[in-house]
Amino acid sequence: MNQLYRRNDALNVNPPVVNGKTSDINITVRGSDWYWAVCAIMTTAALVFSGLSHTKPRPQRLFHYITAGICFTAAIAYFSMGSNLGWTPIDVQFRRSDSKVSGINREIFYVRYIDWFITTPLLLMDLMLTAGMPWPTILWTIFMDWVMIVCGLVGALVKSSYKWGYFTFGCAALVYIIYQLGWESRLHASHIGPDVSRVYLMTGVLTIVLWICYPIAWGVCEGGNIISPDSEAVFYGILDIFAKVGFGAVLIFGHRNIDAERLGLRIRDYDEDPAVHPSTTGEKRSNGGSNGVTNGGQQAAPAETTATNV
Ligand code: RET
Figure (cartoon, helix red, strand yellow):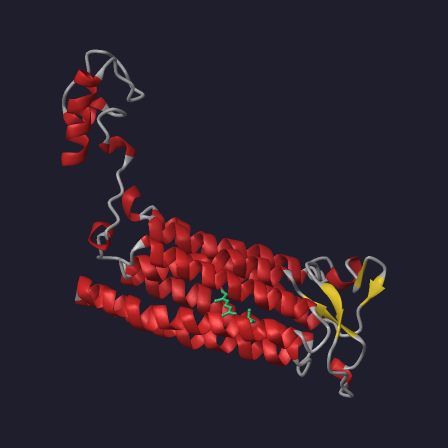
């Protein structure tokens, strides 16, 4: 029986010490267990979303791949946190008497922000590509998103009250993102069609509501040191499950009958290109070239024309 049940040893293998400095306010085995559970959920979701991509032709898989990538990235972040890795001890601004948060320094999981730095732009791409937004607007919104995440990270690593300065800049960036999602992208989506508008509204509202909760979590965890690292794990964990897995499921389901081309995403499959697969046009190419390189403009031109006209 003992062999079947192996207890979570992560905190013994990776104790709360980094570069010789010990942290006082740490996750417990229960927190680590929860992080492992979220790691399993994210891994499963990543596998399911990438598996589902195979039910679609290649040019229609963009949203599956983006969403699977989000969950796969999160799985690695949660693996780190379950292992009690990816954190550094930072002195708290507010010393508390409650035993769960008493002490000089607290484990700050910077790996969370690395996850968000990768995944939040992907979430924005999922949403804004659904709304058919122009790419300069998407890039600018992603820039604001990076400002928000980096401000959150730097603020979390600062021990003085100056951390709230970074927090304020981050919140300003979030306000801009919410404006983009709740106003411009919503209007854009509504012009494409009612089905696109519906999936955009569902995922957009979910995103806005959840994203507003993140700075609240930051305020009571990294900022105010009010709730314990175990409660922090549950707070951020639940938000991440809904913001990534819940969001992803609604998005992928909503996209099931939406052709990517309607969103302005004209993506060619490689066997659609006669330069690569001559057989798809029904004509045999006499020069035998299979890599698209021909001997001159005269020969290249018909191939190009066929490719763009299909
Ligand atoms: C921080 C602190 C600085 C101010 C603000 C924040 C907002 C973070 C958000 C994170 C969203 C993460 C998601 C992860 C899942 O993939 C950085 C906490 C406004 C909105 C959605």
